[in-house]
Length: 256
Image (cartoon, rainbow, N blue to C red; front, side, top):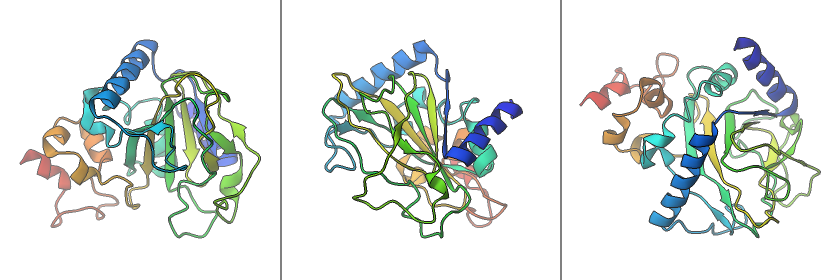
């Protein structure tokens, strides 16, 4: 496994991304797809409000609150070791949501996931975003567009810039791992099918999370998490200090 981890880590260091095939098995994919559709209907998920969110895109946020089905994804043994190898074992879940592009969606602006963080570039990876393909990713249905090697640039992309990019095409069940500095954006969906994915963003333990996991996930749900998953959402301490409560471990709150 360590050889495989090193292989993907080297790809991400060189190109800014890597694709891991055959992560989710067909039965689980079908279950996830059906449940995402169920939640979209149950929660009356609205379309995005702007071109960046996607005016033909559905997003279910705070996904860990919607059932045990989703708890195995952040700790998946084919993906988490790669994340830990690059960020370190003190990493956290920054956000976890669905990203379903409907037919007619336009291309998202090219951006970097870490561009809101005011650090000089290039810098060590502080964010890794993962896209779990619930359906096939093709150029026609809006596969994520990537500019390989752009994570080594000393600046962020211009918001209205036009850049040559390649589609991250992959079969369903695969996972795309993106360096937080790599320039990328969702593609346009010119097909007649929806392109479904789970977007799971990890960050280093010293970075503030996109979704406030401790307030967003009720304690009665977090109490049912595995120890590793509870650590990943923030019931943990980074480097013996960051995240403590009165010099005590925050995980003890789940025992109350």
